[in-house]
Amino acid sequence: MTEPLKQAVKIWVDADACPKVIRETLCRAAERTGLTCTFVANHSVPVPKRDNIHSLTVPAGFDIADNEIVKRVNAGDLVITSDIPLADEVITKNAVALSPRGELYTKDTIKARLNIRDFMDTMRSSGVQTGGPAPLGQTERREFANHLDRFLARATR
View 1 (cartoon, rainbow, N blue to C red):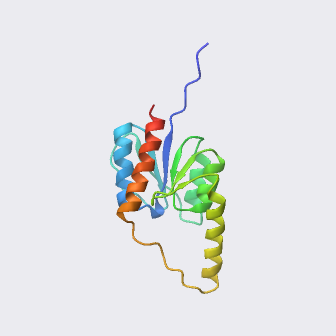
View 2: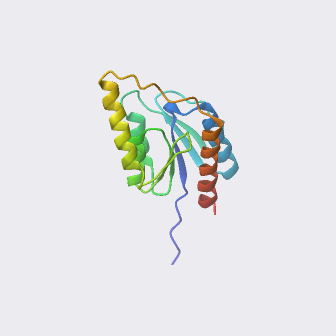
């Protein structure tokens, strides 16, 4: 009897807010490893013409891209997102969630991140100006690259 084929790990990107430099890093990683990388957004995302790199355009609307990723992600896949509720759903499906800023979300940290997100949401809806995230710096890029490299090393063994 033959063993069932192991399903290849894939990379899914919540591309609506993914910085260009992170998108380029992911494309280079996909080219180097041969893993499939799919950028999901409600607009066209330019990607290199490679068999394993895709852009999936979904209709505009609240959480449409997130829902598409959740529908397609499998255990062990990597999802790049800064969306905390999406990261929570991905972790629930035993996939890996990594922010473009290099924060690796885990079962141990995601609930606290959800609470902080909800608190900030409440503050904003009360009229408090919380500001947006700082520009992506070298430290965040390095953290992202380090987590990505560790994931790729495990996935391609």
